[in-house]
Image 1 (cartoon, rainbow, N blue to C red):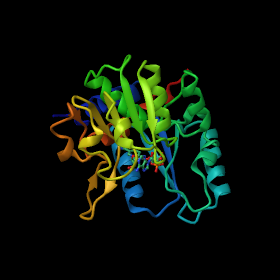
Image 2: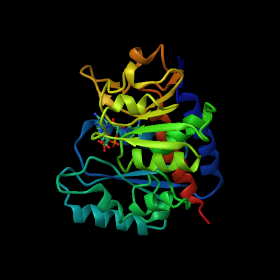
Image 3: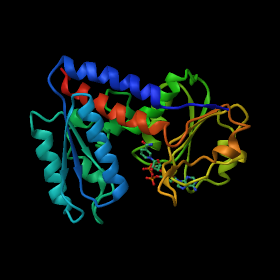
Length: 275
Ligand code: NAD
């Protein structure tokens, strides 16, 4: 089984993004945070660090874990209206009672670099230009980087969230794959996923995808990031179990994750130079 790492691809995207950022107005990303979740704060710090390395300004607007939904919406609207801010992102999780989907409607679609505004998903579904969520875009970028053919092939996406599963299904459809979306109510998951030539696991359940879930020769992309007891991360795919059946698998960590961050910053650089 081939391991499809994301590191080289992420480095190439970062290099290109750095050149784009240097060519025009300095891009600025604002990340709105309203959580004390340590993994989430770590991710935001990693975005800020990566941005700095590419000449992209990154403001972390931390409203604290007790922020009211109205306050979050007003902050997103204010940043969307600020001429020197080009990308606006709302980090999850959010305080109880706050809905990411509802709040993200306050992000100007032209600055919606993580494709969180429902309008962005609608435009994506309609085949119109929009920023896709960076994670869904990262899956497509990995498939392209490793020259995995999609046209006419059976692709199965496990997970139907608005940040990963649904936008990814549209992106795969745009590339003429025959797409099935499986989810927590899918009966006999293994019988569905075992038909996939391209299988994307985005359920957030460690080890959900085992040997019986994978067809011989399938390309498997593991989006899942599940915390382990020793402070690390593991994917949705049991890599050992599928090793002698899958043709290729992305590692966790080091697969989809680094490409996601690189694409978020690419989207920000592009948002800064939209006509
Ligand atoms: P989510 O909880 O919003 O959605 C999970 C989806 O998986 C749901 O649609 C649910 O129906 C489905 N699901 C859950 N259990 C299932 C089961 N037993 N069988 C079949 N389907 C099942 O999660 P999300 O935000 O879409 O994220 C999914 C995973 O991807 C998480 O592990 C998350 O941490 C990870 N993620 C990684 C990146 C990255 O950059 N690598 C970015 C975003 C999310």
